[in-house]
Length: 144
Length: 144
Image (cartoon, rainbow over the protein chains, first blue to last red):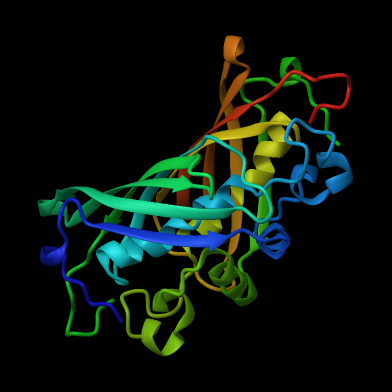
């Protein structure tokens, strides 16, 4: 358990995470989210679309951010809000790197604001976003 | 394929989707997102936390919105942006209902603004959010 204290978090701290987005990810995500849009699951259809092939759900790719939030703010941090803008499609086999950076601390609310950019293996930004996490005080040494 | 036309979308249109969030969802999501925070995967740990048990990743629950966006704007709609605020934890076995509503059409940009509320089986709002989708013009009758 990463017990990073609120006091130890600094503006400018960064965390990165890279992962290849696979076909298995997409089908598992369909089952989780209930979204079987053919652009994600039907290659015969998607091949004739503007994307010329299946693309990952935007929210799937966006979800790669959460690991960096835990790294920056500790595993006990609570995800309060998230904004994402989807800028480019992500295809099966693309390797996505999320780089997150602490931009602000709101001390009296124990909040941390984090800006993130998701890029693919070619350096193209695919998502940009902003998240907010809360770092609770520890209770009895066991609090997450 | 739902070829809903931009012209057919109306402010006030609504779509709902309900799904029980399972333990299998959470572990599959861990593999997709790379986030194995113990609050999601370690019952022995999470049982002593403020939540008194494992909770689902916020972004997992948020992802249930995408199906409603396709229902409202057609399967060819492109998810442009999404904002979510996480208000209450979601536990294994909770049944979440997302209700999404078209709040605005930005005609010259072919955009549709959608407000969504995620509630659990007790009627408690767990997430509130706002999404933006783009409805491209059809091309040659095959465009998604």
